Image (cartoon, rainbow, N blue to C red; front, side):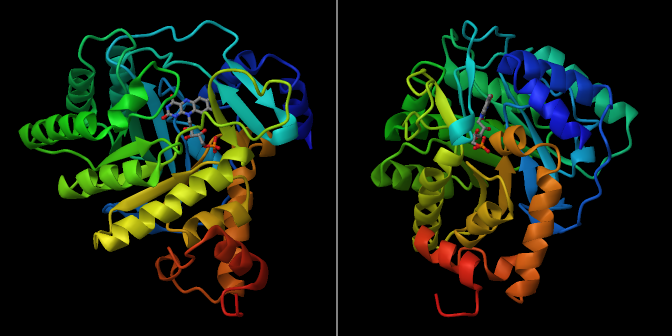
Length: 367
Ligand SMILES: Cc1cc2nc3c(=O)[nH]c(=O)nc-3n(C[C@H](O)[C@H](O)[C@H](O)COP(=O)(O)O)c2cc1C
């Protein structure tokens, strides 16, 4: 197929150049419209046409919002967006690890900044009829800001009107010390300021916190406790990892690792998070991301507690039909396991091992 050849050629080019080229292609509408199964569902009171979204970092500047639905995504998360435009770290800063079906990136929030991106989204929403694809807006602080928390509240203020949901990214490993916002004291002050901002706004979409996969259970529990106590809407689990379980020659490169080697790590955090939420008797939503590349990995995320799923690296290695394939395969699992409603199996597996057995043997067989 022609896209296989096209992808092969792209894989020979420097990853960031290839990425910028792909963004141009999508932006200009040179995409086939891929017909996908509809799996409608409502999460956080938002109606999604299917549970598979494109994770943050692919479309940092909201350039593809009018076209990306053609690949079948139910939602797109743009960003991370900072208050002021930012160049990010010196290049090269993205590395492909094909043997591991992984990527290491140390971009450092390169983006066009609040004003330009807000105008882009505003223009798009003014000139187009509401599309089926839902829009998440992911925000973070500038590297050299003197007040990180103020950056977040400014960005919430600016984007609340335009997003279906907002994401507070505290988990990029590529902005020095950003992950310190996970610590109890810092997280409490961040969340208190966010809450104040939400109250001042008349109307604020659901807010989710995007967390690191490299947390201890104690840190995770504290974060979830504050998120639940402050009645925020959900978590994204997870961002990239700084751990390395890969063989590629690029394994020593600094940055966040994504793709297949992140799957197990991020799914274990998902299982633990769902357990902690159950203990708190909370049903806040979880978007699971990390190593999803096919129907099997997507089904495992649902069995382990995901309401919605996102991917990025999976599209780099599997190509533009990845969403269609996931939705077709999920449909086959649904029929095989006699699932009426995905809600009925969400969080059914209490371990990754159990989820794997369900996927292999079927839900109704002994696992
Ligand atoms: C090149 C690249 C850039 C990314 N940039 C961002 C970003 O700006 N903000 C963010 O929250 N996550 C970012 N991510 C992380 C992804 O959103 C996602 O959480 C992570 O890659 C795990 O999903 P995956 O294994 O499907 O790629 C980036 C990932 C990659 C590969």
